[in-house]
Image 1 (tube, rainbow, N blue to C red):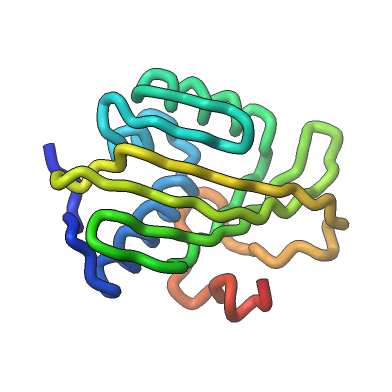
Image 2 (cartoon, helix red, strand yellow):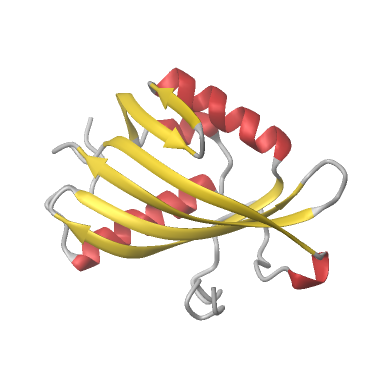
Length: 155
């Protein structure tokens, strides 16, 4: 199984890979998302360490049980060969209705088949008022092409 675009990345293929990841994560479908990662993919997500697709599925299912009405935007930060660095922000609310914007950076490493083998994520959550939200699109689909990205939103 391969997952194009494949390394070595160009700026265009790195941007394509980042947008594909954003679109997949916005589905909030752990099974679908896990297919972008190698069978033994290793993650650090904040202070949680996860390895392998089944653990990724469990992690993501738990995440979206807590992070409601999740919407994510990713932006390419840097790339080289088989590595991509992204910055991202996402908005969600908890069960009590408190909204948050999470800001973070990820470093990704890919195998030759285009599957991600390592994901290192550093993330900070900031409580926001609902009136401060910036991510407005139908949560049943990906961010529309005409919705501003992080830089255009001043994030």
